[in-house]
Length: 116
Image (cartoon, rainbow, N blue to C red; front, side, top):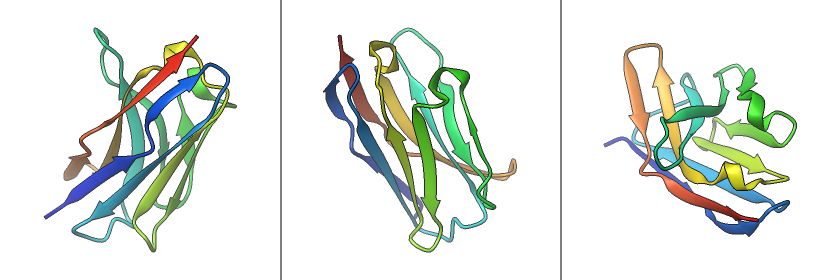
């Protein structure tokens, strides 16, 4: 059974940092593209950052220079380091694992709240 379990969310003041982790289990995810998405109330889910199986990364313009995504393929984990957080970063953050258009898995989400 495939599971993606996020951890590390919480409440932080503007300017602070949080580190989100995603533990994937149930299969070998080394060939998957791993990503973090977020969804704020009343808004669509959006891509925050993604990392390919080869380590290439891409980020939403709104988080470039503040967030860093990394992965440990041997451990099936992906981490999102979030610095200089802003109130507009408040959202539920979801871990995603995707293999082309064949497989697409989601975690249950973790709440990140940034107070001003």
